[in-house]
Length: 371
Image 1 (cartoon, helix red, strand yellow):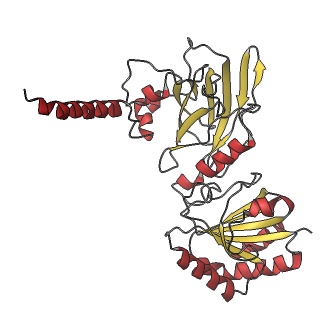
Image 2 (tube, one colour; image 1 turned 180 degrees about the horizontal axis):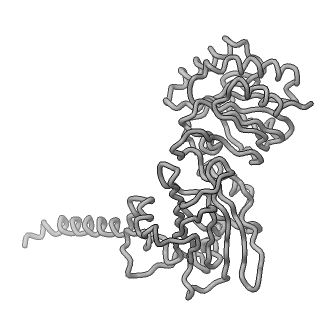
Image 3 (cartoon, one colour; image 1 turned 90 degrees about the vertical axis):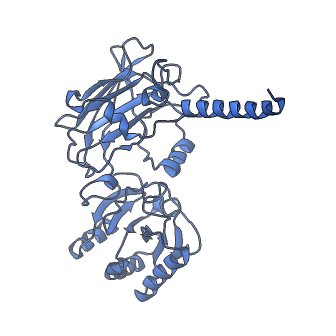
């Protein structure tokens, strides 16, 4: 054989090997396909995530799943869970296909279906943090609800008191994944088993119907950085909650479309803000840019609106897009509604109005009144 071909054959061999290794390490192509692995009619509201043979501290977590209104129990919601074992690894069963969820998620995994009351129960072992101990222990999970358009990943089950569950970690998850700070599941020991509870509210962004949008009453408003076009912070990305939220009341108006229809509302709130003073109340109109307009187009749109309605105390800002994880998604803004009004007091939601009507305007004003 001509020796000149040896380098070519060697390179070809390396390329084939590289492709094989890559194929073996490819993640499953479809997250929601994990629900195709089970027959939903055979599921109950209880799942055993870790097998009985798994070593570790036994744990039970119970709770209730609600529709996006935060009140109505969500029945027949499919839920899939997976987590690390007691050594912080997704311990694998060697016989599984390397492209499968079973390979990547390990043997601590399980499914359930909520009952008529929306109840669920997880029986497992307490997962350990990853061996590098850079992130807290958690349980990952997906939901697939009959009232919603698709399945999706929800905020991990984290554990209160975990030394790795720090303020910086919560902030990182807010800005990167749209997590809401719920403090973590509080576990307590009963007869040798850790017990905890977590109630879950489905995200309105995925609803088939469009009546719900925005954070629910009582939720802490997270930090976010809109681009200010009008108002005292014009030209900056000042965080409304970080700069003003903790010491004042106010309202955030998240607008997906038909900004001009809010002229009378903005004028009414302008009067209210002028009377109360900037130290006591704030109003932010936040455009969600659903059509992905350019920076120049958005600035022109918001400036024209502010000037047309003689606004001085009402701030106007925008975020990259209605699906942006660190802004509109974080505030659970439904892209199908026209607008979402979120009233707050010292950074906690006190009222939520979707597609605000004239009759609701005075109710909103009362929410931010100091009287």
